[in-house]
Length: 225
Length: 167
Image (cartoon, rainbow over all chains, first blue to last red; front, top):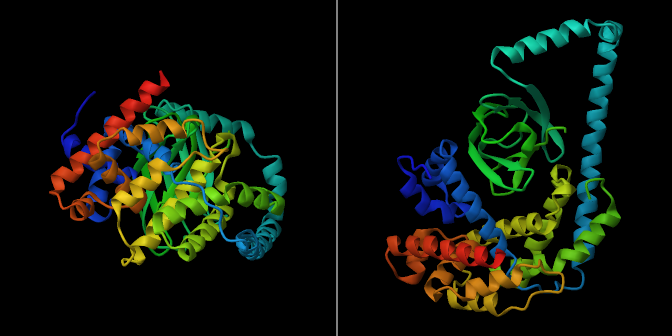
C-alpha cells in the first residue's frame, strides 16, 4: 500500500471522521488529504462500514403509543409543502415552455448529426468516453447540476445556482456498492458554488453524489443509467 | 417511499420505529428527547426519499445513520446529559438481536464484546456519542495519544474479527 506524506497522522483521525465526530480545521485537513490519497480513502471506507455495523447494536425499543400518528402527521405537513413547491415549479416550466414555443420547430428539425459530431470531437480531444449530467436536488428542489466525465482521468463538476443554505458542504460519492468516498469540500456563498475533482471510480459506478453539512445528505444528484 | 405513498410511509415507520427509537434512546437517554429525534429521523427520510435508490437495499443503514447523526447533534446541544461509558457499553453488548436484525449483527456484538474493555468503551463513545479523541481522553482521564490509539487499534481488531467471521 502506497503511503503519502501525512498518511500516518490522517489515519489516527479516521475513526473519528468515520463516526462524524471530527470538526473544524482538523476535519478540513483530513478531507484535503483524502481527496488525493486512495489508500487513506479505502481506510475510511472500512472504518465507515464498521461504524454502520456498530450502529445496529443499539437495542430496539418500542416508542410511545402515539409515535406513529405523530410522525405521519408531520410527514403529511411536509408533503403539502412539497406539493406547493412542485406547483410553483410547474408554473415556471409552463412559462418557459411558452417562451420557447417559437423555437420548438427549429429544435425538432435541428442539425442533430452536427451536434453528435461535435460531441464526439469534444470527447476525442481528451480521450473521453462520455459526458453526463444530473440535477442537484435539495429537499426535492432543483438547486444546480452535476456533470460527470468518463475519461482518463474521470471527473465530476458541480454547479450550485440556487441553494438556500450557505456554508461548507462535504462532497461524498456513494458507489453502487454502497461505498462512500469523501472527495472534498465545496463552499456555497450567496446560494452559488462551482467545484470539481477527479473521481476514483468510473462514472457509471457512481450511485449518487451527496453534499452534506451535518452528516445527512442536504443536496443530492443521481446520474441516469 | 420515493413515490410519495402514505401507505409506504406507514409501513416504513411501523417496521423501523423500534430500531430508530432504540438507537436514539441509547444515545440521548431521555425518552422525550429520543422520541423527538426518532420523529425527525422519519421526517428527514421522507424529505430525502427522492434521493434514495431502493436497489441499494440498505434502508436500515440509511435510516439508522440519520438517526445517529440527529441524536448526536441533540446530545451536543444538551451538554448536561450524563456520559457513562460503561453503562453505554453494557447496553450494547448485553442486548439481544431483534428478530428482524441483520444476519451479522450478532457477530458484531460478539466482536465488540471480545475487545479489551478500554478499546470498546472508546469506540462506543465515539460512535454513539460522537466524541472526538480529545473528548474521549477527557472522559476516560487518559492522554490524547492513548485515546486515539485505543480507537484505532479497537477498530482494527474489530475489522480483523469480522473478517475471520466472513471466511
